[in-house]
Length: 517
Image (cartoon, rainbow, N blue to C red; front, side):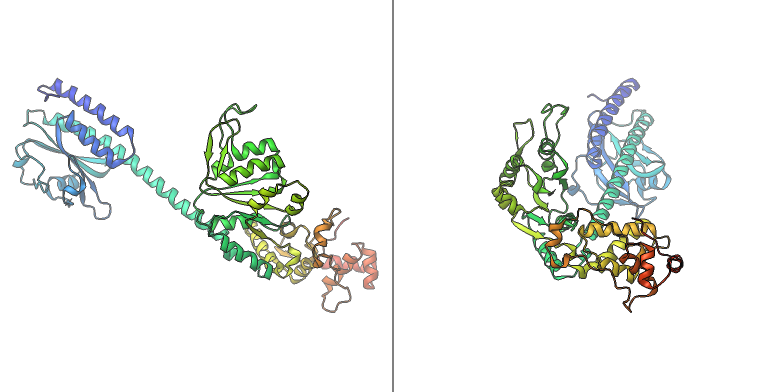
């Protein structure tokens, strides 16, 4: 493009250059790349060569050369200007545009980079972001001054304003990235602390074996099968395995297989293509694809049908799947953790569960003991749950010794989940935050899992405390009598050798919550 010889030619040239610069700044958020492309556009269409951008160092307040057109970073020494030092330092000090018809005639000209021609004009303008000086844009026209230096300086100021907007956007995005990164790191630390090995509750021999197994298997990509009754904490163990594994930075996807019918389960796990079935208005990734590079936890794996078991087996064996209604084979890298409360061996014998899938899942089995088989852990578990409930309610919750003895007298067929529900119910009913024995209300199960209870000799219901036990205080004796009498006050009074009026008075002054049946 020829050099402009008139104000009209200059205006057309500047318009073309402005259009090209706007295109450059709208294409990318890479600030360093954009600056180099802007300097290139100024030279090609604007006849403004030897472009240089310097930025203000927020720590020292000096001006550091950031980009030079035509030179890589390694091709020039790092150069800095202090306020008032040279023409660039003058801009740093005065926050004003500098335009000289011949740069060599100004005694402030330093030319530390040896970049500029002394007989040619020189233009340097501040780059402001929200009224704050962030840098300097410097250029040199290709030809000697033709009387249009002021117009060129005004144009360079326009370019600097566009660069300033780009800088502001880049700074906003950088700050957002930093905030997101800090939030992500905080969440990761929180998750690691929550699911760390140190937060696993229990010191009984069965649980120590479980914790040792979890620590060992977390290091590898081995498939894990977590066995245990409902409410024993299978999902917590799966969480601990993932968040303490090399895949902790990858996705962690969970699905309860018993919560969906088979036709929806296939779509949920494998995904579907648009039009695969009624209602499939678009393509959708399945849980296996979502978990690529991470971990997939399938709870209640024993509930899936034999037909679906064959489809699942292929994914586990080959690491490949096809979406419902699709013909394209997708590769996935997923670490599988499965859990079940069912007796899979019996299901295999009866033909309800495929033997080959059983062996594919049962690589590293971890059996969680029921709460009744580790009652020595109950005080610690109750304390942990009470602290968590109190944190949720924003107050301190405490358990009396009598309440702890009442908890230990129950067989807990619902395991830890039942215990947590019992404690939360008691916390809600306690105005002071102190949970005493009368607040421990354990519903009588009409359909208790007899098979599960019979599995352990410790499972038999424990008798209520003896009202004649000398170790009981007055309140405990009254509650024990009420428990033994089925909370019929007249019967409890006879057990204690009292009149109905006397036991009613005791119930009132001892603040005992009478259960209704």
